[in-house]
Length: 290
Length: 290
Image (cartoon, rainbow over the protein chains, first blue to last red):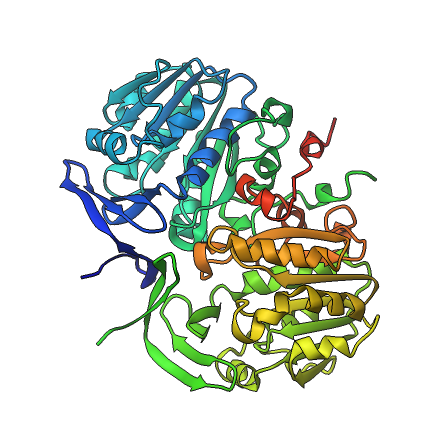
């Protein structure tokens, strides 16, 4: 017998892979959760039918969500991660020597349990003494904090069901209030190729709460189309102009993020420039040596 | 009845989409050729089971293969395209006012015929008066030309079967001989995530024939993993240092390529840097205004 997983959306297309073994299946109060063992991707976490992380390529998403804002901020001490109960974003955040404390707010305890069991590399920092785990709704949590965090990372599922409120203007305003004056935020912002409507909405809503909003991209093979957007938002810091690459240790154990990619990721394909009104500064890309 | 196409490789994973209609199927002397009508991607050209172009996303591959070398060369007059009988690369090449002549060398006439019939936007410049179409093996063709071309574009299928010789060191040396002294070349160079062995081999072989060899990347949703590599090779011109963005018309009708992306595409993810010994120049990514 062969089992094949398919993630198909309205485009009538998508990713498929063979499942060697179904390791875990549960309907939690929030979502359906499956863990599959596969040949190429290792273990795969699927929420409501959508691939969230695979052992093979999770480093791309987690490094790009975490390090772009964390290296833009000159001295990130207090970090908030919303969603991301798998621990991958936390793992990247605690690599920063500046970071003194991370609060992880996850609504679904099962995600944390499953990651501890089936994704040891992803969850390996979930017992880090710098970390506090809070099992609650991130939308409610941010309302309770004012001018507290340096960096907020929104590691959410697709904006349907419980995560829909995580792309609302009201949530983004609360998040802005929870940040200190020089705070920065990054959010997973969907695919510009498959879901341009979501990307546009995330950008528009971010702009109601933050003066600086820009999109950046990474390759994530197991997300639709392989091209994924993140939204960067801040109260003033620019992710390219204010980025100091000398803050990145030359011996950092990153598999995707580099200082060069940090800046390159903000260069959007022409078709995606209108999604956030983000025209690349064409006059500034000339020969730097002239 | 529902028909679903799957492109699966040794990874036991891949792309799947629903086929609304099978428009064309033929075993030519060189390969099996299928054309499918789909909901999201429009018409899709499949060679030996591998997606080559879709109406929805072909612009990414064709723009990036053509414009990076064509805007690196200061005055590209004579261009050679090997493979690419669909006409997409030719369409991009003739957008350059400098280009006086393009030779298209395609081994399989059926690709050209099928593109004219089912991909009108891709094939629309195949009757351009600047174009000469030669139905023959590109490997043999390049041996006949010496110091003739300014730019060569290798628009090949995967390096198995008839296209295997198109990544050999011998072929690259012949191509170098067919280029003028300041000539540049770009080649499709597979996926760094799924086929790092091919990427490494292409790079190594290019280096036996060219002093300047660099990889660059683009997002191509319907190629495995969505992340695709191109190899840039030249007799001296550097694709970043010698690129003059003012050569790109501000009203160019590009949907992917921008001057900013031209340079950004050479910033490889950390895991891909070793494939071509291409360390990103970290010291040079600092704040340009300082």
